[in-house]
Length: 135
Ligand SMILES: [Zn+2]
Ligand SMILES: [Zn+2]
Image (cartoon, rainbow, N blue to C red; front, side):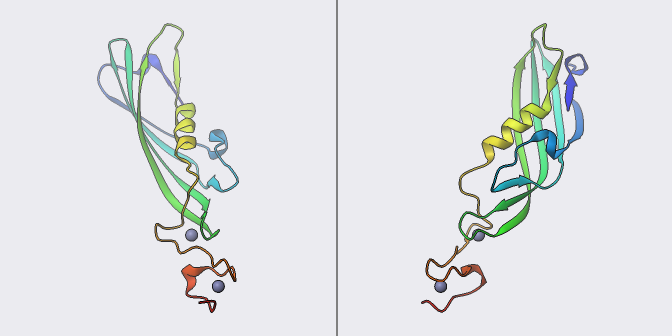
């Protein structure tokens, strides 16, 4: 998804689009995009700068770091960019900006839910499904 700099005017305009998950290429072992990303960009021009407010939504498939269950969740990201317009800049690569933002957001700790009980170190049972007999 790219926006041509000449299409960005001094009044706020909105650009919407879908970026295929394979174009974003953000998947790792324990965190994958499970849908294409829907993107909405509010853009306007102030002098030599372009202001972008970007909103992204997608489904994510992640492996909980505590209980190792795979969970699917709907996520959104909101971020902004302030880009200086130089003569070589013909278009703004939104896919690249979204990709960087998503990668930054993938933490080391991904939980299926905030209070995930994890797995029992003795029997390996999932404690979210109830107490095991080890206690
Ligand atoms: Zn969990
Ligand atoms: Zn146990």
